[in-house]
Amino acid sequence: MTEQLNLSSSEAVEYFFERGWTDGLPVVPPTPDLVAEFLGVVGLGPDVILGSVPERNRDLTVEKAAINSVMAGCRPEYFPVVVAALEAILDPSFNAHAAMSSTGGAALCLIVSGPLVEELGFFHLNNALGSGSRANASIGRAVRLVAMNIFGAKTGVLDASSIGHPGKYSMVVAETKPPAGWPTFAEELGASVGETSVTVIAAEGPRQIANHLNPDSKGWLLTIASAMRSPATFTVGKGAQVVVVLGYEARESLARDGWSKNEIRSFLAQHSRISAEELEAAGVLLELGSAHNMVPEEDGLLPSVSSADDILLVTAGGPGPGWSAYMPAWAPILHSRASTRLVSKTGRSEAIGGSDV
Amino acid sequence: MSSCEILVVLRPDYEDDQVEEKFSLAPRIVPDEPFTLTIIDNGKPKAKQLLTEVASRLGNRFPIANVEIVSKASAGKPLEADVAQLVAARSRMVITGIGD
Image (cartoon, rainbow over all chains, first blue to last red; front, side):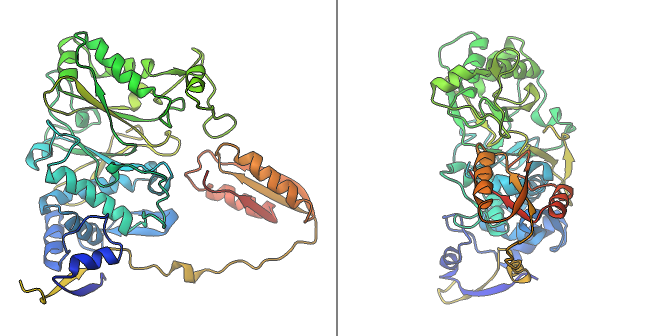
């Protein structure tokens, strides 16, 4: 049973800082009535276990998830999305233990796709990856607070991030409606109309990609591919999953020119391949004889993505001259894979997308 | 709300941190009969070379008859349980590495 603490109301926030229960920002004190409201939304008992990290011998109850969601500033109606995200993170294929402890400093990046994006007020156009939306900020923050407070993902404890990035506060990509003829990200994973999916991927920070002048939509893809093959990215030359966020002009011009999402993925996978010489020219030494055996393939090149299907292609961002974004997974797929759940407004979420996504 | 009002809140962290007390370190016994040493290579670059060198130096101190190497596919995942059992059955001493 969760311990109740009696605190002076004027000192409660400071007490949470002192106990190391925050991410560095003030939290909303999790009173029993607020937590009960969250539990009521999903209709799950407080002791229901959402999942475990066996390597840490710890599991997560719905009540602890609700407490941390209150602290993060979530509204009660956000809680089903948080539950789905946490269940995705605790899927063994995601390998939460490694994703939360690696020196690589990954964010627990969420991709939300479906009608709840509009219903809950996620930013999905302007500032899709920026600040200003309570849903984007607090849902991602709730997930991070659970990682810290339940699973010990804290500096000096079990989070060994060498440098980390700001996405470790919150990192949520909410998909905007794609151009006509393109399926949504959720639909590609098997969701039906009316269903919302949450995908989690352990990600490095987002790279903004600019292409302001090129009228050729193929030019947009070449620019994105050039960002995806930067030798400075850990997974380039090894192969991993990546998130590509197609901004407004990019997606509209690509769709207008007849590109399908599969064709875009294939193009990006091919054009993000890189030679050993390019890596070495940038000072990157090839890993050989280890888990990442960087031996060039038949075309003499090394992959930056594991396969075309490992490009998580999402539409987000508002009008503006030529901005898209890209986030590589923190590690190759042999260590961690993105994981997806369908959001259920009550009860547990449902896994979709198979082992690939 | 006055500044001295008492606020009841729920504790947000994991509340069973006593796992450490359930275990104790195995006794440190210096083997005197020839034995097998197994190295668990975590898959990181040069891990195998580093641990092989450690094994070589240990050979100057202990009666190591045989060195076996087990390589993990991912540094981010634990050794599979069946492999761990096999290693435990075959080895008197095991060395593994963590981190980079």
